[in-house]
Length: 296
Image 1 (tube, rainbow, N blue to C red):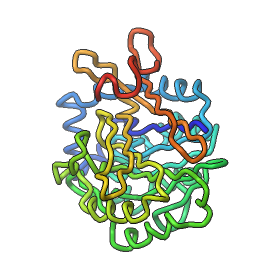
Image 2: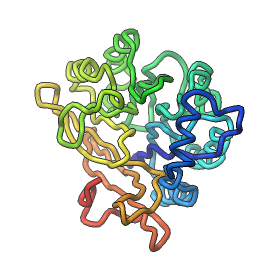
Image 3: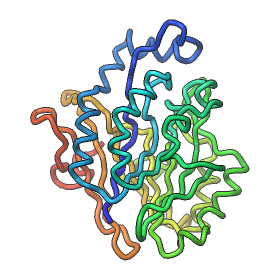
Image 4: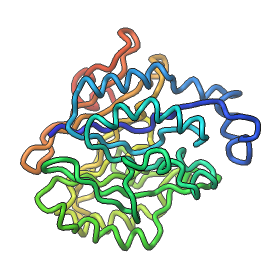
């Protein structure tokens, strides 16, 4: 099977004046006054959908941040953009911190309201069966807060081990999906703390205890992608982040959008392909030199 992985698309629609409250006011200042809106473009986001469709994957993983500020307008625009892609194959989706940007968006489960047929239902973590031989355990790490830190509460942490031992996953290659990284590109604990998952070490211990059931860990949040591993005493599990999939083409800053394709055969990850947006031709192409050869 070939499984696509997209993340951090950040569909952006200017908020109305009535939506400029608390954190969204600060975020809009960064986006519209300090130029961060130029980091993501709808042209690249449309090309992302086309590029993934061209690869015709058997399943799709999306590790969050569909939107920039979790407004109703952004969720609608993201749905119109992504639903045709998500509908083409079995898809598993988790929220990102930008999809739970405000307390109203988080408590109202706005992403699940709009994208529920791909997030699934019930308590987190959620188990997804993605065709023959592949499954995913989806962990929700995102809460509304003034900083960008992630949280896994004790109840979800307690259920994570049970989800990994779900009998429906027996004989399948299992992806563990979360928005936040556990480790940085050097294999060290991810930081700074204001942008990291607070319970990362506790999550690692659970994953390490069930390492025989975990094929790979996939995440987003860090816009410059990388591949690393957990330490050997925690199972040495592979960790993969393609990098932001909706990034603008900014060669002078060495930034562009990426998505990954994973090949799984006989319960093994046999290949990782990384595709990058090339603004000179206006489409996604295989990363020159192979996956992660160009760095982030």
